[in-house]
Each structure stands twice: as C-alpha cells, then as structure tokens.
Image 1: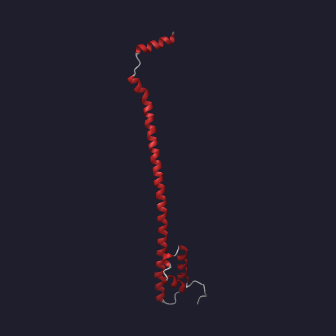
Image 2: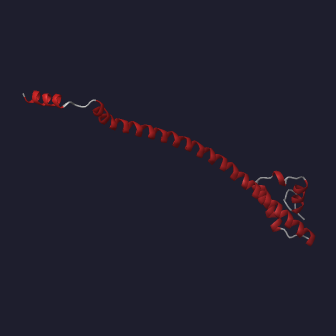
Image 3: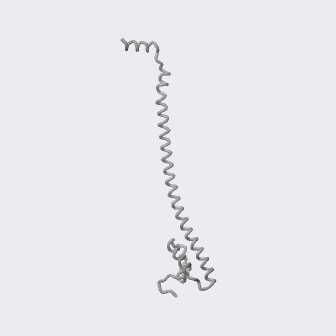
Length: 131
C-alpha cells in the first residue's frame, strides 16, 4: 500500500474518474503513463484496463502534440504571407525600374528618329568648329 500523497494506481484511477486526463498537460500525461508502466497490476482484468488507459493517455499526448504543430503552422503561414507580400512589392519595383531603364535607353533613338540631324546643319556645325 502507498503512503499518503504518493501517486499510485488508486490516485490514477481517481484522475480518470474525475476526467482530469482530458485537461492534463504533457508532463502530467507522462506521469500517468509512468505510474501505469512501473506498477504491476494485481489482476489480469486490471492489466487490460491499464492497456486501454495507456492507449488513452498516448492518444491525449498525440492530440496535444498536434495542437502545438497546428499553432506553429498558423504562425509560419502568417510569416509566409508577409514574405509573399514583400516579394510582390519588390517585384513590382524591379519591373518599374526595368521599364524606366528601357525607356531611357530608347529615348535617344526615338528622339533622333523624330528629330533627325540635317546633313547641311551638321556640316555647318563641323565647319564652324574648325574655323
């Protein structure tokens, strides 16, 4: 028999009866499993019950783990969404700069096309510079 305050099978049975298992955190669930694994059940019937309890406890731990992953996934999704917006804005900026660079490069060609230098004017400018 256990001393007062010591956690044993009777204490664990009370936790199940009070439905404390459903609200337990991971450390408490590990403690419950530790009790099940380290105390030999007095009868075969209790051994079957302990197996079902251990499965229940492991299921609860898995549920807690998946809830934690879900929270992390939501956080990561938000960060990815923010990065996507930043990349989109940077892409728009690069496209604007590229179009501006192309237009600046084409400006002399377009200007010369619509405002050609007349050969006679050009010849006079050259002659004026030499004189």
